[in-house]
Length: 466
Image (cartoon, rainbow, N blue to C red; front, side, top):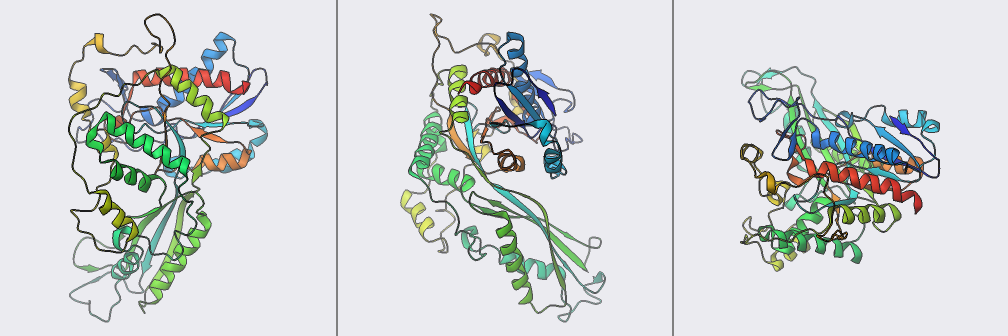
């Protein structure tokens, strides 16, 4: 935790909830183009483990404060809360915050800098995140692992079969979750939010027609951001590989939740549903459900002071954003087919007519870092990291507004801190969609790093004046 104090005019918390919460960088298969533990600059990008998620944004925020200190323009208290264990459940984070709440002091605003743009060109502001619930569902038997040929028979209740049976009931056709009342509390789409989705789809398709058709792209983004989902991640069984009836079987299950869905209510509903399904099997085996991790969904207010200050800083720093479009398009299902799927989620639809969801890979055209890094670039075409948005006569040029987006992922700390300190939060993505965070060849564009630093500097200077 780093606390930078000055004149006590105002105090707001700059939250960087992810610093070194990286995942293992296994380079045994030589998939990295560099040593992942030795950052290296190549063709305008910094490559290294955790450089985009989230070491680069942390450094940008810290230097934004340092710049103001040197300029003698820091007129507020800035509190950095830096924790690096999100990928392992942020154990102890809430307790540490509550234990040191007096040290942190009163908070007016919370800023998170974690994650990425929708593509590689248009800056974004994030105002919503899905919550998450991770659970382990396990079935145990009274017998040890046995050979399926020697001891297996119809009289033996098999844990793996029982587990598969109850998990298969969780979702129906078109992945609709079957837990009763699961969708009841989801907030309706507002007119203002639909306008934001239209702005996003129009911008992305104008830049790259292959992202279309717009109806499918819009529906895909809504499905990722404002609709819940359930995923079965992996199975584990006891005993070695072979023709065994395992005595124990377990599966990791996660549910992504959306604002107005209460995590505790979903835990109760999930537990009741699986318990009832298991009881119907009339089995001798035993069921247990363990909640491993949970996080509330978050929904910010794009019209409040913190978002508007961030928006103004982004427009001033990045300046005009080109709308260069690529030729070509990919045919997709007609709007009426999408409407049919929405209205009749349990109706069979041919796979050839079902929408194909847009993913980070498709929105970035499958960026190949190895190829890009190996190709020399013309230094005269590279972007000057310290350049400002100025025209040839020195006048500042205003850029287009950033895209206001939501995200399908979860960051447990943001909603907790909002409730704990009674302060609104905002989320500034610093990286590009193709940064490959948590993956091989993670990278961060140098210009994004420097311009994020300038955005932070402006926000830290202007927000206390609001």
